[in-house]
Image 1 (cartoon, rainbow, N blue to C red):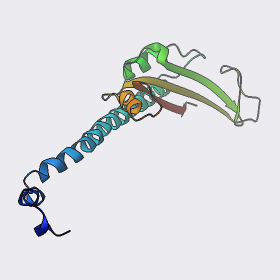
Image 2 (cartoon, one colour):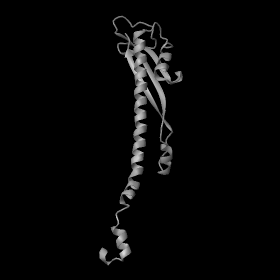
Image 3 (cartoon, rainbow, N blue to C red):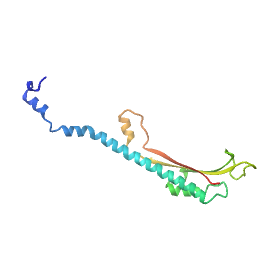
Image 4 (tube, one colour):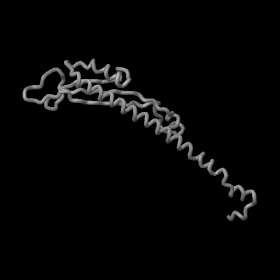
Amino acid sequence: MRISLLPPIARRVIEDRKGAAVVELGLVLPVILFLFAGIVDVSRYVCAKIDVEQAAQRTTAFALAKRPTSSSVAYLIPEATAAAGVPSSNVTAELFLECNGVRQSKYDNPCPAGETSGRFVRVSIRRAVAFQFNWTALAGMLGMKSMGSNITVTGNSLMRIQ
């Protein structure tokens, strides 16, 4: 159908382009805002992951500098909690011995003669990171499986200390 055959009022509505930019912005703006919210949450996750990884590495370096005299890791927990800013319940530390690459049940025992020994320290730190955007509500609106309001990041470090 040709535009010239339409009534004059219909022709004016079809040819008028004054509100086109506003309509386009209305269609694109929600997508841009969701992308921005996603970028913010992903960057918070990445920063928290780097923080707990560095805290775990700092704690294993502390164990290397202050060599353990027994199998107790009690001196490592406060170091890890201070480095990561998490409660001590979120920190796991262990010392273990390997003889010829086989993990032993006791850290303090020596390896049998002729076997290569290796003493290790492992530190794991967990931290919950809260989302800035309510993704649960969005998932519910879209009929998707909802997720929690935060995500747990874990930082691990393993170092041979002997």
